[in-house]
Image (tube, rainbow, N blue to C red; front, side, top):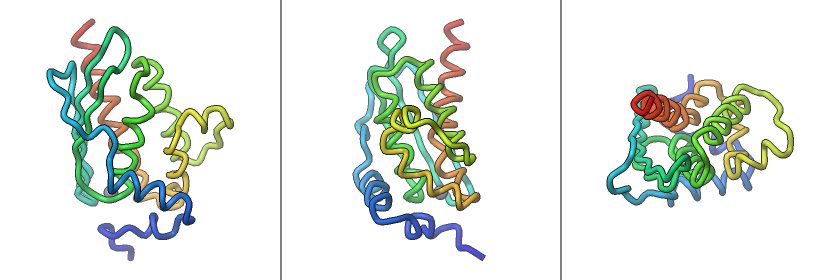
Length: 157
Ligand code: ZN
């Protein structure tokens, strides 16, 4: 039985991918607080105690700033950090499309080279799909973002 608190998936990934993941985990991107956010979102994964908290500032249709705070396993925190990089400057529609792509990747679908490239460093997480219990960790920040976007849109509509 695998101890959910340790990081076998990271250890089992090849060196290049492991480096990218650990780099995001140790130095999360966009970790500055965002003043006066247009919406916030949070996610928890009780399975390994992962938490993410997002603050998003919009400029028209685009994500002008995104702030990430969180704690938990390296997969959840690296994925969250990578997510902030790829959605920054995107429209909400584009961000939601990336979310669907990443979910498809995690569920074992093969993506076109263009789609894989659009996911940036998140490509490094594709080995996680061999560890089904950790897919939730990788998707945590994305699910939080989706929910936040939904609430934001509902509030505006
Ligand atoms: Zn986790």
